[in-house]
Image (cartoon, rainbow, N blue to C red; front, top):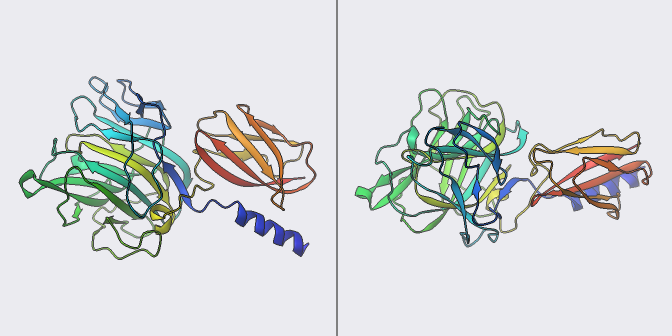
Length: 349
């Protein structure tokens, strides 16, 4: 029995994909958009894994478009897919979008992104709620109202440069803490945000072009705990095009449990990368288990035994997976859907 558990531990280690909870390389077709293109207040159907949760229905027909090519940054995992453009035009595109991941009540999570702010279009010299353009969401889909770790922007040096800032939460008396470095238009920067919801008040931290990539978390002086509201769970990452948000290319969004997960040289995708993933029943008692996700798209399902041997592989759009041919025991299931991969332990009785 001890040997079996040791083998299972080896298998779990072999099929661990780290703790990168979500990776978004915008590997979507051009022309295309993320979040949808309907002139409605919310669009839970969305497009390309993103959903609109806030829009001015009468004017919001503009889109957040996928563009050919990507952004890159030395020291992190190589970029894949394409990139998107926040248009910096609140008149045509007053759109807030989100991409969900499996809800987590972790004390803290990180997100990172590559950003290239193109020019000074609609930027304000004063920090305000109109200037934040990215955050965590406590829910996902068509309704996201509680936001944490809000990343914002202001114009600086009389419009010749810009600076990034951070606020901890979306409600309460909120101020912004500024990264006191003038950044250049047309330059790609790596930005990392940490949001700790376990403290009272919550704390958001910001790094721009940080050191110690993929290693230990470096210190930062840019933190914010001005808002006093709580944050119940992490469920999505959000992007926002509003009246003072930037005209900017964005790429390589990562959400992770540690600093290394979102800044490493090797991209790792873990168990939580498929939004809404559930496997049931587990243990399997009648030879069939079911897979549900938010997308419920065609997926490849691969089952491994405790020795790491592949014992089943199928590609299907059906939720039911037949494992009648497998003997009782413990297995690992690898699921790939729409470019995302997840693993789960499965018990067959």
